[in-house]
Length: 637
Ligand code: ADP
Image: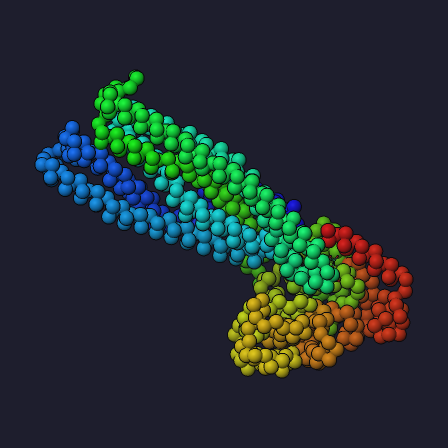
């Protein structure tokens, strides 16, 4: 697992998307034009106002304090300006104060604009991605891990947020500062400006090189932290096994190893980083000293070397101050590029996922499934999760109201056959029809609505017992919910819970036993009142007593409905109208209980073992099972 954390599980999706950032702005940014307009304009004004006090300081030094030049302001006719030093000083102070006040307002607006647009866009992207993701076929989910999918919804969306907020903010600052400061300096004294700006491209290049060097280090770091987290998660999940196998020491070592790898990778990155910033400071410091020496010499002695003209003290001070202000935005150049590249990769993954065609083909105008009787027909069905067929030539009919039981060893394909009925997957060959309607030609929603499904592991959502029973039948009233719970033999244990039907269950709530969860799931199915019922090992998780209770409720539930049941305990399905015995994805025997017993095949033997009539299955079945298990395990790797 550790090894593949480094690979991008969504590489395929990512590669399908071109110009992801452009697409992000086109699809999500355009509707926030207003915020972007405000943010951009406010950024420009705020940054330019930031420069104003320094410029005024230069003017004040020369014209008021030293009186070496006349008092004049860029773009303002001299006739409008006060002539007395007092008036000039007051005007300068007012301009500086105004720059701070308006600057603050524009900074506030700028922050609002970038943050608001970033938050809105990431919210929209997150919701859309989830919406698309949950509609993808189960194939998609079966070969992705939950953590990987979560990483798109959290990490990738966060990368976008970082870029849209911090990235664009820094980029706008960089641009305004670069052009603003460079413009002011060039306007004041172009020769000294070239000297002062000398380190800027150097710094930009240097930070870009730094990002290139550190990026692979960060990548390794992420991989090792992923490995460490998997190890910790795994160990905490398996704490019972660790304790019962006395392997605490062994696990200490493994955690130590994983943690050390992370430490190592992290330190490597830190080492590069802590060398970078002092170097940067050194470059900008040298630049500063150089400007100081050239400018200072110029002020006191005269233009050095090939330079000519005069340099006033005020201009010199402006140079010294502003050239420092351009360095830091420059140093962020590499970071901005980095944020952009990450956001680009993240949006490509997100859009790749949104473009995923793994969704089941569905005609938008498909009619709803109309069940009159509930006759289910599998017509020569073949299906495999990958290339290889898992179930083959599945051909049978279940008459309305009948029960069809699927039995056979683990891995034979029983669950797979029933998932096809729920259209979790589409068949590769053949067809499944309910009352003559091909499942692929009716709306998916109506198929799922018509079929009740009680699975072997029931997932409870974090919420009350009542909400979990009513899940999917949200309109049910209290009375109906209690009725359903009673029919599922769940009412009694529910009323014993701390808050009865209002008890919180699921991930963070009260833990229910497997049997209790299953009865809630049965109550859910009863409430839904479906035409066709699928019971996937519905009574596998409970003690014999509870099983009898559940069986009683199920008998009632299944009486009038076409029912499919998978059960290991053959006693629960011996009254089924049709029993299909599956082995290796094929139907090897079929018929009623008595007939199958007479046949003396796999079913008869399974029955014999379960009824205690024979001690074990004949050799040939055991050998076949062993071969199959070996195959399945090899396939799982
Ligand atoms: P049963 O219900 O009889 O135990 P299943 O239908 O669950 O059998 O499984 C049949 C075979 O299909 C097994 O070999 C299993 O490993 C494989 N299988 C089940 N689900 C998936 C899946 N989502 N992706 C790939 N293979 C699967």
